[in-house]
Image 1 (tube, rainbow, N blue to C red):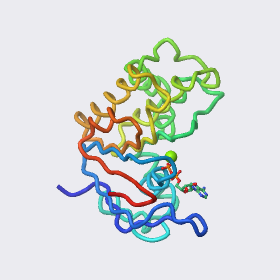
Image 2 (tube, protein in one colour):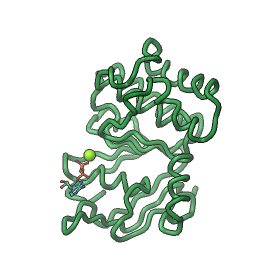
Image 3 (cartoon, protein in one colour):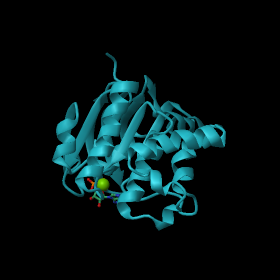
Image 4 (cartoon, rainbow, N blue to C red):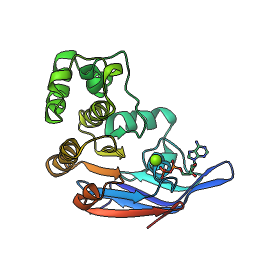
Length: 219
Ligand SMILES: Nc1ncnc2c1ncn2[C@@H]1O[C@H](COP(=O)(O)OP(=O)(O)O)[C@@H](O)[C@H]1O
Ligand SMILES: [Mg+2]
């Protein structure tokens, strides 16, 4: 089957520093892949390129047969918002909004009314053990709770591809396994493709495929 996401020869430089070096990557619908590697090896940088957040210095990234570089900025933002879900490594929740409002955001941005959007958010949050905290502002959450809200928000609109940067880093093993189950369930039931950057060998073990990154080189 054709890849839903494919990268070829991707380099990313920050000034003169090369963070990603000629990366080739491909991902099918419903495939869960793990990217492992030590700190500073370029995992987050690669993920930003794959997700169309940063434009590679060289090389191409295609989603569903279309190169990101062929899209206007507006079309690329719409694509990211509607078809992708992100769990970023560093928290990016809106602190003044509640847990439920944060998780429902992708649906609200897509024009869905509040009641069904919050119902969908509540369902995902429930599976992640957050039912008691739906009305709490996210400024008042622990690191692990925030991480679960970020995961719920990345999944709530049933995207085609989820990009998750160390999504279980702040979680104990029970909650890490709930997050992993959400990703695996979505891949199995909805054909969602998932890219997980992780240090967690247990997470990588459950993935369908694995990459390792060393000094910007992906293998
Ligand atoms: N915005 C940036 N500006 C300059 N250098 C950066 C920036 N972000 C990351 N780097 C550098 O690029 C390399 C790869 O970083 P990163 O992709 O964050 O690695 P990882 O996620 O594997 O820890 C590191 O050497 C890091 O210091
Ligand atoms: Mg990183």
